[in-house]
Image 1 (cartoon, one colour):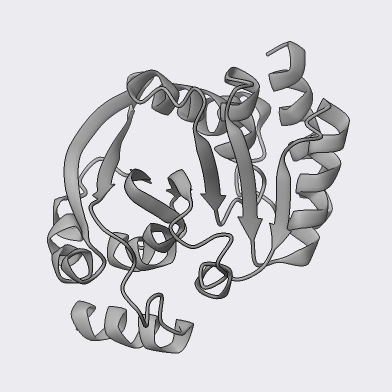
Image 2 (spheres, helix red, strand yellow):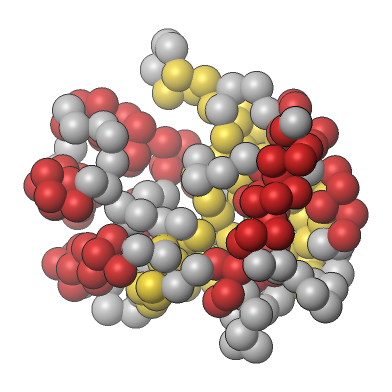
Length: 219
C-alpha cells in the first residue's frame, strides 16, 4: 500500500505497539481490515461533501481512510480515550489533514452539546458496541434527514431486531442493509439508519442507563 493510505497504516501499526489501537498487527491483514474495509463502505455509500462524525474512532478507522479517499468530507473524529485522540491528532498532522476535528469526549456527553446535537449529515461507527447501543450513541449527532452508518458483521439481523425499540424513541429507522466482502472469507454489512426527526429530550441517556437497558435486552 502506497501514498497517504500507506503512511497512515504504517503510523497506526507503529503507534499500536504502545497505544493498543488495534488487535490486528500484521500489515497485510491490517490493510484489508482497516483500509479496504473503509473504502468498501465508501463504494457502497459515497460521502462526498458530507459532514461526518466517526464515533469511537480509536485508531482513526474508518474516518481517516474515508477522508483520504474523499477530501470533500468534513470529518470529526471522536473517542473517549485521550491517548487515542492524541494519536488521531498526530496522524492528521502527519497527513496534512488540518481541517479534521479530533475530540476527546464520551459520545453520550458530547451529543448533548448544541453544536453537535442534530447537526451532522452522517455518523459512522465500526464494531464498538451492539446496534441498539450504537444507535443511542450515534443518532443524536445526526440531523433529521441524515444517516447513521453502522459497520457490522455478516449477520446483523438479531441486532437490527433488538434495536427497533430505541430506534422508535430516537426517530430513526433502518433504511437498508448492504452486504459486502473483503476477499473470499470476510463478510460484512453496512446498516443504514435514517434519522427522521430531532433527537427527543432526555437522549442520549447516561452510559449507566444505556448499558443497563442493553444488558436487560440481552438477558
